[in-house]
Length: 257
Ligand code: NDP
Image 1 (cartoon, rainbow, N blue to C red):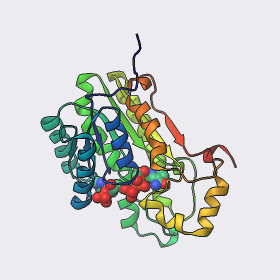
Image 2: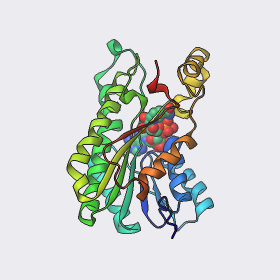
Image 3: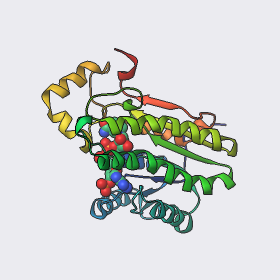
Image 4: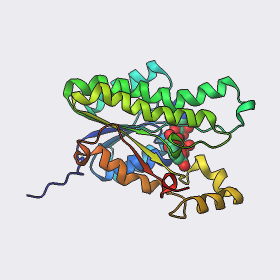
């Protein structure tokens, strides 16, 4: 008998921040593997356009969109409740929504510090908690938190981002400590430098671009497609005993000096 451990047909997945970038690629990848996917984002126009594109590929019965602000506890609870009520039991959650803010720490406003922490870290707690409240009684569920190479390594001018992504590592462990016994697997993916809108200004910066190429053993930027395989693995039965891990998808950046 051959069993496709990566087949996630019929499972319902919510990917936060999936109107573009890495989240959108993960959403498309999960849909390709058979999942029913709920897209999420803030900007309604961008979300609707992403929704329409994936509906063209996979049909309206497998692609949905629910816009809500992942930093808002009430909106998040309503969003997850909507998925459960209108689509069905949530099996896979990818906490991907995130923002960057580049400024030297001495000039950093507390409002920006808090905005980045709320968007990148508190959101994973809020959406994760709501998802787990539904998953735990059913005894199964996959939560994938999107971390970063900044989970391990710092760089000047991105203190709140670095703190938030470090927090994602231990939030992933905390979720594992509390929820793994209920049949949930919670892991994180830590992408290296991936060419998206978030990093377009870095790609365009000749000095930064050549630093990236030199600093990355694979000698290239990552693509959003590079994240799909690891996300599918962690979302599938192939990772049923993988708990609390941070998987770095970075062309080797965090393994060399
Ligand atoms: P993008 O800026 O391309 O996309 C960010 C997504 O998050 C958008 O869909 C955006 O929605 C959504 N979003 C932002 N804030 C909220 C919010 N409050 N509520 C709901 N949705 C929100 O980012 P990337 O694809 O580059 O990054 C995605 C994730 O991957 C982030 O967590 C990032 O930290 C992480 N990452 C990225 C790397 C990279 O090199 N690009 C490297 C390592 C990690 P909208 O379009 O409506 O604004």
